[in-house]
Length: 331
Image (cartoon, rainbow, N blue to C red; front, side, top):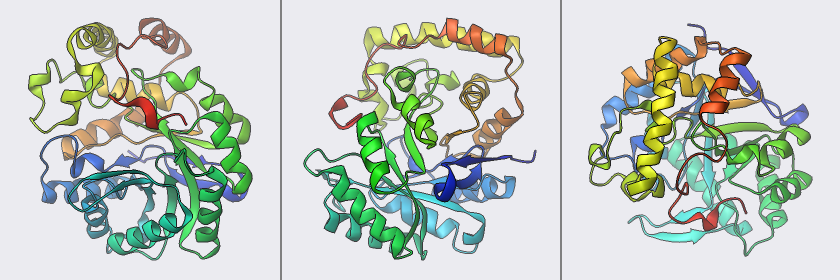
């Protein structure tokens, strides 16, 4: 399959990427144990298939995921559209310091990411979370300086409120807003974020398009997760919430079976069908799941299909918050 391309942003902020990206976070942390050699193989297989949009962040690991991605692309930099993030400050031992948007920190974080990745520039640099103690204009002023210096080519912001997106965009054009979006997490459709990015001509990068793996249909109990998997502490995977969400999942499974596709492929096809300005970045650390995800690019959902899915899994139907602590999102 030839992986098509989509464009994030408009005008000088436009950035062409593969229609589906690869989220690399789980290769290093949060989703249980990983295999470095298999992770490297996944990244190489993605590039071989034409999936050129790789997503990482300094806090994943912490820091180890950027180093992993850097090793994977060392001889293939010209093939890659590389995205990383700053703002969730952590120490080497994993301790969380907090959200940091101070200009001096932005500059230090960028230089550190460039070194770990082994690259001269970052294609898309995101503010990972918004620091409520620092005006976003100050943070984005520092980011604009990084663009002027050639260290960064495009800018993005993650989990930001509509007003914050507008303020950042006034300082420097925003190429992409990255926020969770899936059949399981449809907040952006009614909280103003999606409407704002479309009004401003900003691209939308959907993280966790498989609902943190839930929409794959392979997780039937929290006992299916590794002991160190953060989903064990996620509200949506707890007690009554989990039971209610399994009912939603069954509707997705049935819909997928009727069309002879996997639940994961259906979930990704749904995100892809939301618009040419939307790019999902499913994460995986196994090649066979990568192949399955790429297969979603060949699935066409009709208007009738989309209406049926909307009715089966409407906005607001998922039980439980996306995070145990929602205080750092939608600022």
